[in-house]
Length: 327
Image 1 (cartoon, rainbow, N blue to C red):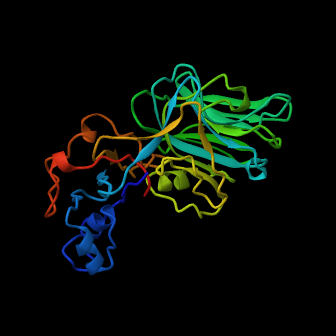
Image 2: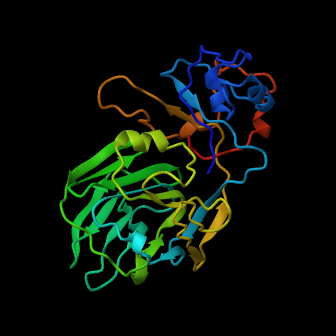
Image 3: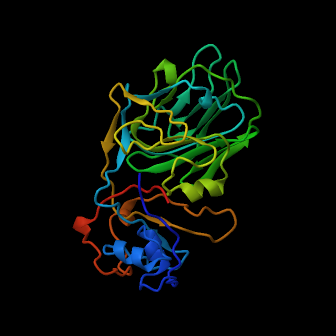
């Protein structure tokens, strides 16, 4: 996934090149260096609102192909296998973007579970909701899969965290469920799989999955919101799994290099998505999310008439689509 995203300051032009800092960061250029800015802004998309207004997401470079994991809901999955680093005994975060074709059943996104008390953790969509399961060494000790409301045919960001004592669920950066669960997760020899309930192979995710990330600690809500649209390098502290499928494989881009294999019909498919989705950024009032609504509807297909063009702005026909990811 690759997207340029920012919360622009529309009135500042630090390097004096005629483009505001918000426009430059939005289009992937350096707002402190005029030369780099001018070299990359021939097709810039303007940001024309106050800092609390609409944030526009610009198109990917012409040579970039966005791919997502396409799962058929019956057999397709990614097999990462079993490695010591995948045993997360005291804390974790699992997050991803999904575009489901079905949500009414049991649809695992990430699962490391086996028989005989080898259930470690599970993250997925369950009867239109989502959440996680955590094992206690003999069975699932926590079943928290009733948060949020997941819809079909649109991209939604889902994240679950657990810090050893408390769990939380976030949808598009908004906290939608939380509770207490204390314990230690068992080390499990079951394989980690994406899109299937691990070694059982009886339930599957049906739809598109992208930017799967697993962390060795519980991220805060601010950290989740801050990285929703940001492309990770793979070297971030405590990140031990990053699968974005852009190379057409299930390679792990984290430092742990826990590469998976596409199995039983799983493919990394080129994904065409609506151009320039708008995310409303509200900072008014305590406890409100910076990204309270997911991109959908007319906002994904057109720009407001009040948004001015920057010189050389491409026509709508020539704009390339990109997914709402990576800041």
